[in-house]
Length: 221
Image (tube, rainbow, N blue to C red; front, top):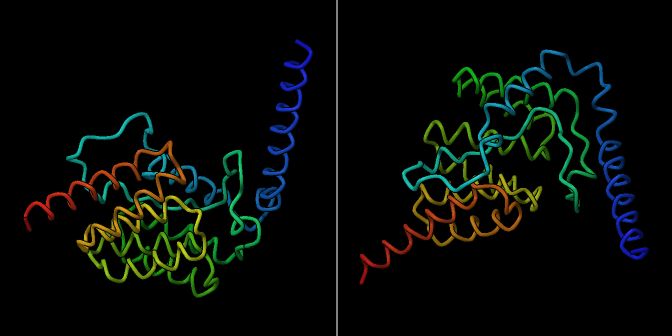
């Protein structure tokens, strides 16, 4: 009984300390006067409307389009899940101007203005070429404009900047699906699922990749 209590106490202490550590990573941004209340409201709307906030309870029907699984990054950083934090998140400080451009791009995306969103995401990248979320979001805007080759290039940059980003790998899998490279789509779907096993999106991308690859092989034989 004493042993169980000790384990419980140690576990609780670890989770509490890790929570404080995660909060400390973003405390400076939370108090940043350069991030307006409007931008924070846009952040909340983006989190509510983005595919990232969709239900994770079950895998959707196979009739769901690959584009419905697109994952767009949030405007402001959010607390990472308990567990290892990607090196990119720990070492990369995004300039305030780049954050503002991403926020403007998300608002344009919400209004359906993909061309305007693209311009803001490109501006964010011009300020900070290492801004993974801007590359990811630019790719989703390009996908919505059926510019898949360009989107593929942006997503390849995104996953090179943050190899631990499940949404970026999932989006890359979608791009490969549309470009009919089902082997690479399967690879990205598997990797994205491993990185975020609780999300239905990478699972659906993987499912579609396997289905399309199987149908292609059957047609050949």
